Image 1 (spheres, rainbow, N blue to C red):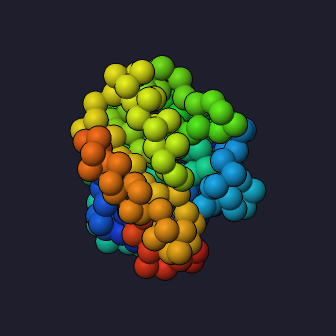
Image 2 (cartoon, rainbow, N blue to C red):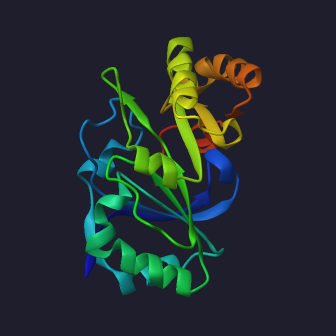
Length: 211
């Protein structure tokens, strides 16, 4: 059984509730339309290779630490075709898992992992199921400007999400774009009781991959 893998690397978690945590990243390839026009990893849509579970475990074992972030693309596209087997193997080896997902493929019943859900607002609509919202441990949003922040706030209120589990980060795949939007996001999160999360890897390395 093989999975479609874009990259595996070791870094610090750059955003969300695990901000600053040394982590091993497994980026799975492939995503679901509508694709995000602001995506900072569009190469994951089409750059990947097939790897068996044992091969992935060998690569993961090269790095220190016990925290593994499984991201994409959209990782849960491959749940039934190999990801569940990888999940079980990593948990059995004592790794702490965190999934980053858009929820567009749904979220399976996952044991032994944290689920960070990033609902996407594309072309005037939110693309996230009620099932995904219920199974997520926290919610991570991308904000461009004040209108997008208000859309996020309305979404949180409509779905009665716990503000303590909401993280908002400024949109931007470059350091300059991040810095341009940080003050607006900062003020909105302060005034509405949300967590602000920067994107540390972008602030430090810009558009460099594998960091």
